[in-house]
Image 1 (tube, one colour):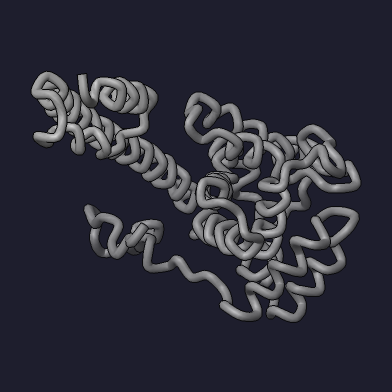
Image 2 (image 1 turned 180 degrees about the vertical axis):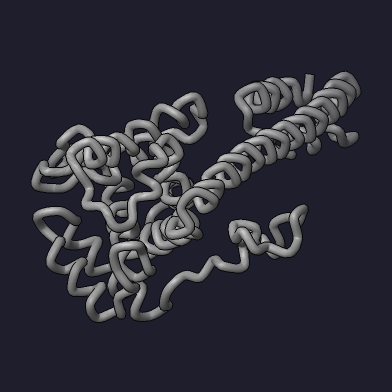
Length: 279
């Protein structure tokens, strides 16, 4: 029967996930009518499977995006308790993405480190009022212990979201240092994943280039100097150089348009919602 062997080959390919249009070639009058009929039926089935798989992929992507957006909204709630964290997570996420792209990482890895950067301080939601409201008092041992727990708290809060994959470990390790003096687990050298190294650099840079309770925002020269001083004992030296080059070429991040003014007690719109969010 002419075409039967080709038909079986196409069916095997389709069953393996290779949705080739070769099977449609078997629907012409050059082949046995039985083969033509089967080829048409299998071809139609293939199209329907493709459509359903695409719909499922879109639904899964939308679900993933909505979950991440929800977590981001929760993370932004930190700014209601501590205005100095306003925009920090999103800026860090974008710096992570830029550095990862410049390092030539694959798209999935870029997405992962971007999400990790955006969510890296989730654990700070667990900070006590005493720590959040501390402005003039020197940080004591109890406060320092609390601060050092936030990477682990963030990891524990997010670990149920398995689709975040390696991002979970990046969140957990963003305060680890190459010389082993970091926290929460005292990792050193190659024990620290590349994504966590990218996140550490981005976190430090945003911290020193924005105004905090303990410092005014530094200019770029001073910020670059701090990164270079930390390169080696704390931060990845190669990544630091690439990061500095990226900032010199493309500048700082600004995410202020992504935030409502409701964090201010004097907000004139008690029911206003977040505006201009383009993410």
